[in-house]
Image 1: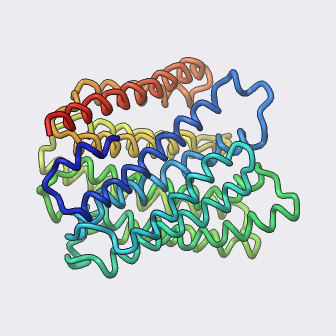
Image 2 (image 1 turned 90 degrees about the horizontal axis):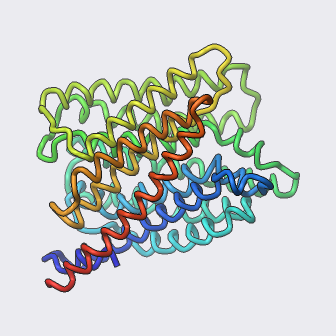
Length: 392
Protein backbone atom coordinates (compact mmCIF):
# COMPACT_ATOMS: atom_id res chain seq x y z
CA UNK A 1 0.00 0.00 0.00
CA UNK A 2 2.91 2.37 0.66
CA UNK A 3 3.79 2.71 -3.00
CA UNK A 4 0.32 3.96 -3.91
CA UNK A 5 1.39 7.46 -2.96
CA UNK A 6 3.99 7.27 -5.70
CA UNK A 7 1.41 6.35 -8.33
CA UNK A 8 0.04 9.88 -8.22
CA UNK A 9 3.39 11.35 -9.29
CA UNK A 10 4.05 12.18 -12.95
CA UNK A 11 6.59 9.38 -13.41
CA UNK A 12 6.83 6.87 -16.21
CA UNK A 13 5.19 3.48 -15.87
CA UNK A 14 8.52 1.66 -15.67
CA UNK A 15 9.69 4.03 -12.96
CA UNK A 16 6.60 3.32 -10.86
CA UNK A 17 6.99 -0.41 -11.41
CA UNK A 18 10.63 -0.32 -10.24
CA UNK A 19 9.59 1.57 -7.14
CA UNK A 20 6.94 -1.03 -6.38
CA UNK A 21 9.51 -3.81 -6.62
CA UNK A 22 11.88 -1.83 -4.40
CA UNK A 23 9.12 -1.22 -1.88
CA UNK A 24 8.43 -4.96 -1.72
CA UNK A 25 12.08 -5.65 -0.88
CA UNK A 26 12.18 -2.96 1.80
CA UNK A 27 9.02 -4.33 3.41
CA UNK A 28 10.52 -7.84 3.26
CA UNK A 29 13.67 -6.60 5.00
CA UNK A 30 11.53 -4.82 7.60
CA UNK A 31 9.62 -8.04 8.27
CA UNK A 32 12.88 -10.02 8.54
CA UNK A 33 14.28 -7.45 10.97
CA UNK A 34 11.18 -7.59 13.15
CA UNK A 35 11.33 -11.39 13.03
CA UNK A 36 14.97 -11.43 14.06
CA UNK A 37 14.33 -8.94 16.86
CA UNK A 38 11.37 -10.93 18.19
CA UNK A 39 13.34 -14.20 18.10
CA UNK A 40 16.03 -12.55 20.24
CA UNK A 41 13.56 -11.66 23.01
CA UNK A 42 14.41 -13.32 26.35
CA UNK A 43 11.01 -15.03 26.54
CA UNK A 44 11.90 -17.12 23.48
CA UNK A 45 15.38 -18.06 24.70
CA UNK A 46 14.25 -20.67 27.27
CA UNK A 47 14.51 -23.53 24.78
CA UNK A 48 16.00 -21.98 21.65
CA UNK A 49 16.15 -24.05 18.48
CA UNK A 50 19.20 -24.16 16.23
CA UNK A 51 17.29 -22.03 13.76
CA UNK A 52 16.72 -19.32 16.39
CA UNK A 53 20.41 -19.24 17.28
CA UNK A 54 21.24 -19.07 13.60
CA UNK A 55 18.80 -16.17 13.14
CA UNK A 56 20.58 -14.21 15.84
CA UNK A 57 23.94 -14.45 14.06
CA UNK A 58 23.00 -14.32 10.38
CA UNK A 59 19.56 -12.88 9.69
CA UNK A 60 20.40 -9.18 9.93
CA UNK A 61 23.16 -9.35 7.33
CA UNK A 62 21.84 -11.91 4.88
CA UNK A 63 18.07 -11.38 5.04
CA UNK A 64 17.85 -7.72 6.06
CA UNK A 65 20.86 -5.79 4.78
CA UNK A 66 21.36 -7.51 1.42
CA UNK A 67 17.71 -7.57 0.23
CA UNK A 68 17.09 -4.00 1.39
CA UNK A 69 20.28 -2.65 -0.20
CA UNK A 70 20.34 -4.54 -3.51
CA UNK A 71 16.61 -5.13 -4.01
CA UNK A 72 15.11 -2.13 -2.21
CA UNK A 73 17.48 0.78 -2.69
CA UNK A 74 18.82 -0.86 -5.85
CA UNK A 75 15.37 -0.39 -7.43
CA UNK A 76 14.63 2.97 -5.83
CA UNK A 77 17.94 4.81 -5.98
CA UNK A 78 20.28 3.03 -8.40
CA UNK A 79 18.42 3.81 -11.68
CA UNK A 80 18.34 7.53 -10.86
CA UNK A 81 22.04 7.48 -9.93
CA UNK A 82 22.83 5.91 -13.31
CA UNK A 83 20.62 8.27 -15.30
CA UNK A 84 17.97 5.71 -16.24
CA UNK A 85 14.44 4.92 -15.05
CA UNK A 86 14.58 1.17 -14.32
CA UNK A 87 16.90 -1.78 -13.91
CA UNK A 88 17.64 -3.98 -16.91
CA UNK A 89 16.61 -7.43 -15.61
CA UNK A 90 13.74 -6.59 -13.31
CA UNK A 91 12.10 -9.99 -13.88
CA UNK A 92 15.18 -11.64 -12.43
CA UNK A 93 14.86 -9.43 -9.36
CA UNK A 94 11.22 -10.47 -8.96
CA UNK A 95 12.28 -14.13 -9.03
CA UNK A 96 14.88 -13.35 -6.40
CA UNK A 97 12.20 -11.78 -4.23
CA UNK A 98 10.28 -15.06 -4.27
CA UNK A 99 13.32 -17.08 -3.17
CA UNK A 100 14.22 -14.59 -0.43
CA UNK A 101 10.66 -14.47 0.90
CA UNK A 102 10.60 -18.26 1.21
CA UNK A 103 14.02 -18.18 2.89
CA UNK A 104 12.89 -15.70 5.55
CA UNK A 105 9.91 -17.88 6.45
CA UNK A 106 11.97 -21.09 6.63
CA UNK A 107 15.00 -19.66 8.43
CA UNK A 108 13.87 -20.35 12.03
CA UNK A 109 12.91 -23.94 11.17
CA UNK A 110 15.25 -25.07 8.34
CA UNK A 111 18.26 -22.74 8.42
CA UNK A 112 20.33 -24.64 5.84
CA UNK A 113 17.48 -24.77 3.33
CA UNK A 114 16.88 -21.06 3.96
CA UNK A 115 20.51 -20.26 3.16
CA UNK A 116 20.24 -22.18 -0.11
CA UNK A 117 17.18 -20.11 -1.00
CA UNK A 118 19.07 -16.97 -0.01
CA UNK A 119 21.95 -17.89 -2.30
CA UNK A 120 19.62 -18.36 -5.28
CA UNK A 121 17.51 -15.28 -4.57
CA UNK A 122 20.23 -12.76 -3.80
CA UNK A 123 22.33 -13.98 -6.73
CA UNK A 124 19.43 -13.18 -9.09
CA UNK A 125 19.12 -9.68 -7.62
CA UNK A 126 22.89 -9.11 -7.81
CA UNK A 127 22.98 -10.05 -11.50
CA UNK A 128 20.31 -7.42 -12.18
CA UNK A 129 22.33 -4.76 -10.32
CA UNK A 130 25.57 -5.60 -12.14
CA UNK A 131 23.87 -5.71 -15.55
CA UNK A 132 22.22 -2.36 -14.91
CA UNK A 133 25.53 -0.74 -13.92
CA UNK A 134 27.26 -2.12 -17.03
CA UNK A 135 24.53 -1.90 -19.68
CA UNK A 136 21.80 0.39 -18.39
CA UNK A 137 23.78 3.40 -17.22
CA UNK A 138 23.87 6.67 -19.14
CA UNK A 139 26.56 8.37 -17.07
CA UNK A 140 30.25 7.52 -17.21
CA UNK A 141 31.89 5.32 -14.59
CA UNK A 142 33.81 8.28 -13.18
CA UNK A 143 30.52 10.15 -12.63
CA UNK A 144 28.84 7.35 -10.64
CA UNK A 145 27.87 8.32 -7.10
CA UNK A 146 29.44 6.50 -4.11
CA UNK A 147 26.10 4.79 -3.44
CA UNK A 148 26.11 3.30 -6.94
CA UNK A 149 29.67 2.04 -6.44
CA UNK A 150 28.72 0.48 -3.11
CA UNK A 151 25.75 -1.36 -4.63
CA UNK A 152 27.90 -2.56 -7.54
CA UNK A 153 30.60 -3.79 -5.15
CA UNK A 154 28.00 -5.49 -2.95
CA UNK A 155 26.52 -7.23 -5.99
CA UNK A 156 29.99 -8.43 -7.05
CA UNK A 157 30.56 -9.68 -3.51
CA UNK A 158 27.30 -11.62 -3.69
CA UNK A 159 28.34 -13.21 -6.99
CA UNK A 160 31.48 -14.46 -5.25
CA UNK A 161 29.90 -15.50 -1.94
CA UNK A 162 26.52 -16.98 -2.91
CA UNK A 163 27.69 -19.95 -5.06
CA UNK A 164 30.42 -20.87 -2.57
CA UNK A 165 28.00 -20.55 0.33
CA UNK A 166 25.51 -22.81 -1.45
CA UNK A 167 28.25 -25.40 -1.93
CA UNK A 168 29.33 -25.16 1.72
CA UNK A 169 25.75 -25.52 2.95
CA UNK A 170 25.05 -28.46 0.64
CA UNK A 171 28.20 -30.22 1.80
CA UNK A 172 27.38 -29.38 5.42
CA UNK A 173 23.92 -30.91 5.17
CA UNK A 174 25.49 -34.27 4.29
CA UNK A 175 28.45 -34.00 6.69
CA UNK A 176 26.48 -32.80 9.71
CA UNK A 177 27.83 -29.23 9.81
CA UNK A 178 26.45 -27.31 12.80
CA UNK A 179 24.98 -23.83 12.55
CA UNK A 180 27.65 -22.49 14.94
CA UNK A 181 30.39 -23.75 12.64
CA UNK A 182 28.67 -22.20 9.63
CA UNK A 183 28.39 -18.83 11.38
CA UNK A 184 32.11 -18.94 12.18
CA UNK A 185 32.87 -19.76 8.53
CA UNK A 186 30.85 -16.77 7.28
CA UNK A 187 32.53 -14.12 9.44
CA UNK A 188 34.59 -12.39 6.72
CA UNK A 189 31.93 -12.31 3.94
CA UNK A 190 29.36 -11.27 6.55
CA UNK A 191 31.49 -8.22 7.34
CA UNK A 192 31.86 -7.39 3.64
CA UNK A 193 28.13 -7.74 2.94
CA UNK A 194 27.33 -5.60 5.97
CA UNK A 195 29.88 -2.77 5.66
CA UNK A 196 29.88 -2.19 1.90
CA UNK A 197 26.19 -1.23 1.43
CA UNK A 198 26.04 0.41 4.87
CA UNK A 199 28.85 2.85 4.07
CA UNK A 200 27.25 3.57 0.70
CA UNK A 201 24.02 4.54 2.48
CA UNK A 202 25.98 6.61 5.03
CA UNK A 203 27.72 8.47 2.21
CA UNK A 204 24.44 9.11 0.43
CA UNK A 205 22.83 10.39 3.64
CA UNK A 206 25.63 12.79 4.60
CA UNK A 207 26.58 14.26 1.22
CA UNK A 208 24.49 17.07 -0.19
CA UNK A 209 22.09 15.97 -2.91
CA UNK A 210 23.49 18.53 -5.36
CA UNK A 211 27.15 17.93 -4.50
CA UNK A 212 29.31 16.04 -6.96
CA UNK A 213 33.01 15.32 -6.80
CA UNK A 214 35.09 15.69 -3.68
CA UNK A 215 37.30 13.25 -1.86
CA UNK A 216 34.46 10.77 -1.24
CA UNK A 217 33.72 10.45 -4.95
CA UNK A 218 37.43 9.95 -5.69
CA UNK A 219 38.14 7.17 -3.19
CA UNK A 220 34.75 5.41 -3.32
CA UNK A 221 35.48 3.08 -6.31
CA UNK A 222 38.74 1.84 -4.77
CA UNK A 223 37.41 1.54 -1.21
CA UNK A 224 34.28 -0.37 -2.18
CA UNK A 225 36.23 -2.53 -4.61
CA UNK A 226 38.64 -3.65 -1.88
CA UNK A 227 35.83 -4.20 0.62
CA UNK A 228 33.36 -5.96 -1.65
CA UNK A 229 35.73 -8.04 -3.77
CA UNK A 230 39.04 -8.34 -1.92
CA UNK A 231 37.61 -9.73 1.33
CA UNK A 232 35.42 -12.45 -0.27
CA UNK A 233 38.27 -13.52 -2.58
CA UNK A 234 40.58 -14.12 0.39
CA UNK A 235 37.74 -15.91 2.18
CA UNK A 236 37.18 -18.23 -0.78
CA UNK A 237 40.89 -19.01 -0.92
CA UNK A 238 40.91 -19.79 2.81
CA UNK A 239 38.09 -22.32 2.44
CA UNK A 240 40.34 -24.55 0.33
CA UNK A 241 43.42 -24.21 2.48
CA UNK A 242 44.46 -23.54 6.04
CA UNK A 243 44.88 -19.94 7.15
CA UNK A 244 47.68 -19.10 9.53
CA UNK A 245 46.76 -18.17 13.08
CA UNK A 246 45.63 -14.56 13.26
CA UNK A 247 45.45 -14.16 9.49
CA UNK A 248 41.66 -13.99 9.52
CA UNK A 249 41.71 -10.93 11.79
CA UNK A 250 44.41 -9.37 9.60
CA UNK A 251 42.27 -9.88 6.50
CA UNK A 252 39.33 -8.15 8.18
CA UNK A 253 41.63 -5.28 9.13
CA UNK A 254 43.12 -4.86 5.65
CA UNK A 255 40.05 -5.50 3.51
CA UNK A 256 37.30 -4.00 5.69
CA UNK A 257 38.43 -1.72 8.51
CA UNK A 258 41.23 0.25 6.81
CA UNK A 259 39.20 1.03 3.64
CA UNK A 260 36.25 2.04 5.82
CA UNK A 261 38.39 4.45 7.81
CA UNK A 262 39.75 5.97 4.58
CA UNK A 263 36.23 6.53 3.22
CA UNK A 264 34.92 7.92 6.50
CA UNK A 265 37.85 10.35 6.65
CA UNK A 266 37.15 11.57 3.11
CA UNK A 267 33.45 11.81 3.91
CA UNK A 268 34.08 13.92 7.02
CA UNK A 269 36.19 16.30 4.93
CA UNK A 270 33.45 16.70 2.32
CA UNK A 271 30.71 17.17 4.92
CA UNK A 272 32.77 19.83 6.69
CA UNK A 273 33.26 21.72 3.43
CA UNK A 274 29.57 21.50 2.50
CA UNK A 275 28.32 22.63 5.95
CA UNK A 276 25.72 19.86 5.94
CA UNK A 277 22.67 20.38 8.17
CA UNK A 278 22.18 17.62 10.73
CA UNK A 279 18.67 16.49 9.88
CA UNK A 280 17.16 13.19 10.99
CA UNK A 281 18.75 11.15 8.19
CA UNK A 282 22.19 12.59 8.94
CA UNK A 283 21.87 11.59 12.60
CA UNK A 284 21.23 7.97 11.58
CA UNK A 285 24.42 8.07 9.48
CA UNK A 286 26.49 9.61 12.30
CA UNK A 287 25.18 7.01 14.73
CA UNK A 288 26.19 4.29 12.30
CA UNK A 289 29.74 5.65 12.10
CA UNK A 290 29.98 5.81 15.90
CA UNK A 291 28.88 2.19 16.22
CA UNK A 292 31.38 1.11 13.55
CA UNK A 293 34.14 2.89 15.47
CA UNK A 294 33.05 1.28 18.76
CA UNK A 295 33.13 -2.18 17.19
CA UNK A 296 36.56 -1.67 15.67
CA UNK A 297 38.03 -0.23 18.86
CA UNK A 298 36.60 -3.08 20.93
CA UNK A 299 38.42 -5.56 18.68
CA UNK A 300 41.71 -4.04 19.78
CA UNK A 301 41.01 -4.49 23.49
CA UNK A 302 42.86 -7.31 25.29
CA UNK A 303 40.85 -10.45 25.77
CA UNK A 304 38.20 -9.45 23.23
CA UNK A 305 36.20 -12.45 22.04
CA UNK A 306 35.70 -11.24 18.46
CA UNK A 307 32.04 -10.23 18.85
CA UNK A 308 31.10 -7.73 16.16
CA UNK A 309 27.73 -6.76 17.62
CA UNK A 310 28.52 -3.04 17.47
CA UNK A 311 29.46 -3.25 13.79
CA UNK A 312 26.24 -5.15 13.07
CA UNK A 313 24.22 -2.48 14.87
CA UNK A 314 26.07 0.15 12.83
CA UNK A 315 25.00 -1.54 9.62
CA UNK A 316 21.39 -1.72 10.80
CA UNK A 317 21.48 1.98 11.74
CA UNK A 318 22.71 2.87 8.26
CA UNK A 319 19.91 0.79 6.79
CA UNK A 320 17.36 2.53 9.02
CA UNK A 321 18.68 5.90 7.87
CA UNK A 322 18.15 4.76 4.30
CA UNK A 323 14.64 3.65 5.28
CA UNK A 324 13.79 7.11 6.60
CA UNK A 325 15.26 8.68 3.45
CA UNK A 326 13.04 6.32 1.43
CA UNK A 327 9.98 7.39 3.44
CA UNK A 328 10.92 11.03 2.85
CA UNK A 329 11.10 10.26 -0.87
CA UNK A 330 7.61 8.74 -0.73
CA UNK A 331 6.13 11.58 1.32
CA UNK A 332 8.27 14.72 0.90
CA UNK A 333 8.04 17.08 3.85
CA UNK A 334 5.55 14.93 5.79
CA UNK A 335 7.93 12.93 7.98
CA UNK A 336 8.31 14.73 11.35
CA UNK A 337 11.96 15.55 11.95
CA UNK A 338 11.50 14.94 15.66
CA UNK A 339 10.35 11.38 14.93
CA UNK A 340 13.48 10.58 12.91
CA UNK A 341 15.86 12.24 15.37
CA UNK A 342 14.24 10.70 18.43
CA UNK A 343 14.21 7.24 16.87
CA UNK A 344 17.88 7.57 15.88
CA UNK A 345 18.85 8.60 19.42
CA UNK A 346 16.81 5.77 20.95
CA UNK A 347 18.43 3.13 18.77
CA UNK A 348 21.95 4.54 19.24
CA UNK A 349 21.69 4.52 23.04
CA UNK A 350 20.08 1.08 22.99
CA UNK A 351 22.82 -0.30 20.75
CA UNK A 352 25.60 1.01 23.00
CA UNK A 353 23.86 -0.38 26.09
CA UNK A 354 23.42 -3.75 24.37
CA UNK A 355 27.18 -4.21 23.92
CA UNK A 356 28.02 -3.33 27.55
CA UNK A 357 27.35 -6.36 29.79
CA UNK A 358 26.53 -4.36 32.91
CA UNK A 359 23.67 -2.44 31.26
CA UNK A 360 22.67 -4.99 28.62
CA UNK A 361 19.18 -5.40 30.08
CA UNK A 362 18.50 -1.69 29.51
CA UNK A 363 19.78 -2.02 25.98
CA UNK A 364 17.34 -4.84 25.28
CA UNK A 365 14.48 -2.68 26.56
CA UNK A 366 15.53 0.28 24.42
CA UNK A 367 15.97 -1.88 21.32
CA UNK A 368 12.50 -3.31 21.94
CA UNK A 369 11.13 0.23 22.05
CA UNK A 370 12.96 0.92 18.80
CA UNK A 371 11.16 -2.02 17.18
CA UNK A 372 7.86 -0.60 18.42
CA UNK A 373 8.83 2.75 16.91
CA UNK A 374 9.09 1.09 13.51
CA UNK A 375 5.53 -0.08 14.03
CA UNK A 376 4.52 3.55 14.61
CA UNK A 377 6.33 4.55 11.43
CA UNK A 378 4.38 1.88 9.57
CA UNK A 379 1.07 3.26 10.90
CA UNK A 380 2.19 6.76 9.91
CA UNK A 381 2.92 5.52 6.38
CA UNK A 382 -0.50 3.89 6.08
CA UNK A 383 -2.22 7.07 7.21
CA UNK A 384 -0.27 9.41 4.96
CA UNK A 385 -0.46 7.23 1.85
CA UNK A 386 -4.21 6.91 2.40
CA UNK A 387 -4.49 10.69 2.51
CA UNK A 388 -2.39 11.03 -0.66
CA UNK A 389 -4.58 8.52 -2.49
CA UNK A 390 -7.79 10.32 -1.46
CA UNK A 391 -6.45 13.73 -2.44
CA UNK A 392 -5.37 12.36 -5.83
